[in-house]
Length: 68
Image (cartoon, rainbow, N blue to C red):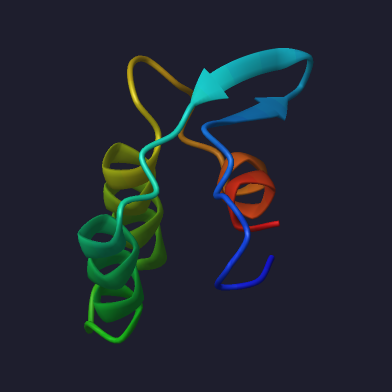
């Protein structure tokens, strides 16, 4: 991914598509969240809540798919 490419608006994970919100503020919020002294489970859940619209599993694989 580069800064000048259009960002994806969905990701496919385990055969299902999930809509994304990769707005500048949300991506920066996730970046800041990673530096917070919180349990990894909390970072995962909050990151997915910020970036994935609607109902979705709370799994590290989904966050990896979003970040790829």
